[in-house]
Structures are given as structure tokens and as C-alpha cells.
Image (cartoon, rainbow, N blue to C red):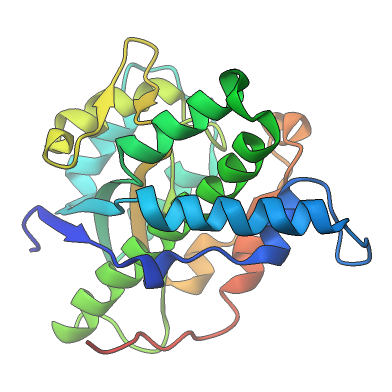
Length: 245
């Protein structure tokens, strides 16, 4: 079983992509943003490349151990997708990742009045890249399983995070108690929010793609505005080769 590992990702591995960053700001592919927006994006990317320090911690965990972590403080919804998914996994790993303190401080400085427009753009760029830290953590775990002969072309990995799909945010408590997040500078406050702001956490679930399928007809789904679960499930149809070192 994989021990807790610290991974330092390169900026090339998590580099931003303009179209989805624009979409997160309500700019659709059919829109024609002004040159000012493009300049803000370029400036935001330049700041990101200067300040971001992407890193993650990944630690494999058994189904039995995760069941206790998932229960948390007993505040989860009574019926959730993840409670049906993780018992059918072949492998599980906890993870926590961040873009570092510098970029979060710069976003706050800009949004507090120095340059709101640039701060808003940098925030969008950083959010996209923080999500890529999650995806790179998934790929790192899958690569490890492939090397050990515990995964094949039918294996799919997805991460699930406290605060989404019925897993209460208080689940962060036991999750963080199982990881040494301070090694990469991440702290958890009393409200279970992470510092630095642009940080991610959760469990990576590996198994046959069918274990990840669920209908979005849970009571809490009515309150969801993004429906990103639909995109995540569709993405499982394609096999994405894991890049070799």
C-alpha cells in the first residue's frame, strides 16, 4: 500500500487553458471578449506562473479506514452517491493539494482594491489550475496502481470532496487528521475551510467505471447549480493514457 507521499507538480502539468477559464466567468465560446479581457487573462497567467507552487499529498487508505473518515461527525446526508461508490472500489487514496500561499495572498490583495478586474481573472485562473491539481493527483495514483499491476485499461479514477454531493464539509476534520497537510503548507480552520484558499482535498476512488455512475436525483441535487457530476461521469467513457515519466 502506498505510503503518504508529497508530490510537487510542474507548472506545465497544471497550466491554465483560456476557454474554460473564460467560461467560468460567464464568457461562452460564441462570445467575442474585448482586447481588455484577453490582456487581463495574459496578465493573470503571468502572475500565476510567477507565484504558483503546486503540490499535493496522497496517502492510500483501505475501504474500512475510509468508512470511518467518511462518517465524520455524522452530518452527511442520509443517502449519498459516495457511500454507494467507495465500498465497490479496488483502491482508495486520500489527497490534499494546493497552489501555495503566494498566489492566494495576491488574489486577496488585488480583490481588496488594488486591481479588482485582475484579481477576478487571477482567481478564475487559479481555480481552474487547482482543479487540475486534483486531476494530476488522480493520474499519479492511477500510474502507481498500473505499475503495481492493480489497474488496467478498465480502471477509472475520480476524486470526491467534502462539501459536495451530500458529503458534509465537516468531513474535512477526519480527512485532515489522517494527512500531514502542514508539509505543503495547508491548514484547516474551525469552519473546515482550507488555507491557502486555492487548495483541494478529498478521496480518490479507483475501480471499474461503472461504480462511479449515479443518477442526479438525490434531494440535494435540486440545490446544485453546476451539475459537474454529469461531465465527470461522461469523461469516464474515454480511456486517457497515463503519461510515463
